[in-house]
Amino acid sequence: MLKKSLVVTIGALLLLLTTARPAHAAGFLIYEQGVRATGMGGAVVASPFDPAAGFYNIAGIAFQRHNKFFGEKEGALGMHGSIQAQLIVPTTAYDPDPGFQPAEAEYAAILVPQTYGSLDLHENFYVGLSNTHQWGLALRWPDLWSGRYQNTNAELAVDMWNVHAATRIPLGGEAVDIGLAAGVQIAVPTQFSYIKLQRNFNQDFLGLEDATVRIKGHLEKPQFGYVLGGLVSINKTGTRFGISYKSVIDDLAIEGRFQVLGDGIGLTDGADADLDAELPPVLQVGIAQDIGPVTVEVDVQWTGWSVFDKVVINVDDATVGDIVLEENWKDSLALRTGIEWKVFDWLYVRGGYVYDQSPIPSETVTALLPGNDRHVASVGFDLRFGPSTIEFSYMHVWIHNRRKRNVEGLEDGGTANGNYRSGADLFGVGLRLDL
Image (cartoon, rainbow, N blue to C red; front, side, top):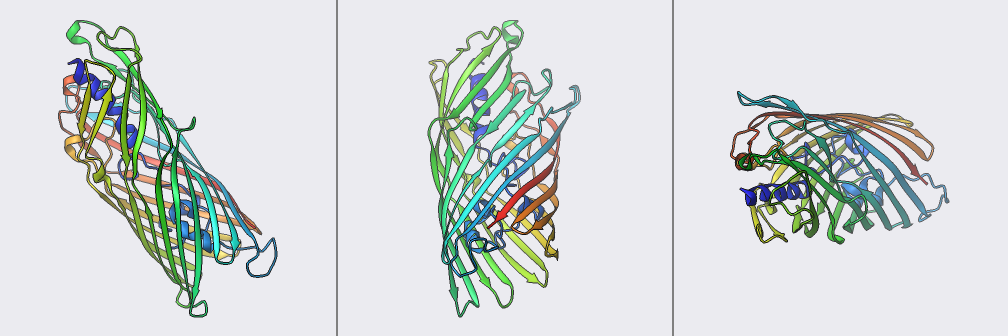
């Protein structure tokens, strides 16, 4: 009983740290890392014409608009930067099986900041730097809800940096432009890379009240992956093809520690739990077409969640030892569509739609991650004043109800089986400069 409870506790910590897509493909990857892109449903891999190209397609830093602040001649230095933020307001409600009480998660709104910058060092050579926060979570369930032995409080954040360079190659007298880029993505162990998780520990078998187990963890050291980007622009027809690939990040080393609140019989307060996790690769391809002042784009995104099949956890406790968790997630696909209309030189409006698959099989879904396939609609607009642009976006996420009916949590006092209803609203604002 004790070993099983500690297995579930550490397993929940792992899930928070490695599931990379919440409503955003059923984990905790926040794909909305740019205000313009969010307004187009994330369908910008073939139209990455703002500084958020540092996340969506790094080849786009070779195609930024210019105001020639530093001169009119070809090859003049250009600078592009953007400070943006997304406010995410999620909702989740639990409709239990007969005999249990319904509950609503007490989510905290999640503020996700992004910073982007790039330099045009030469007419054919460009460099960029970005700071994003793809992983994030902040939620709290009522203390006495049916799933309290799986989760009552959780927070997660990961600080990501991306350093990249790109080149732009004109062909056929500039009839075609080809952009190629490569970069490094880094998960950085700063104060913004942390995990907190809390749940109840069932001691009914001892005739005692529940204890509370809290886990705090952090990244032990930087971990690296690579990023590739490509963009082909057929200038005469206004057709573009884009591709972006983010590699798997191996050996994401996590240090966790238990805190026991109350009388937790047999639990070691301060025990260490170390594990290595993998973050999945992401591939996105797209095609965009300009039709007068309107741009239409369709993208397909693949996330390689099958890397998350099982995890080995090393626990510094003789009672527990090494633990193997079987998850068996599957790869997922997302279809993204977006439209952008240049109404005036100073006003651009946008819209988007997304259908996004969940990678979580029914056998391993838990109250901590009751995600499912989702539909998304978004809108946005820009106001441009010379080199300055103010960006706004709004996105609503509809998530298919998730029916949990498995034995996860059974040995700890409650499966929290039932129906989970989830959704989210995202509000974005950004300030951009093109010099």
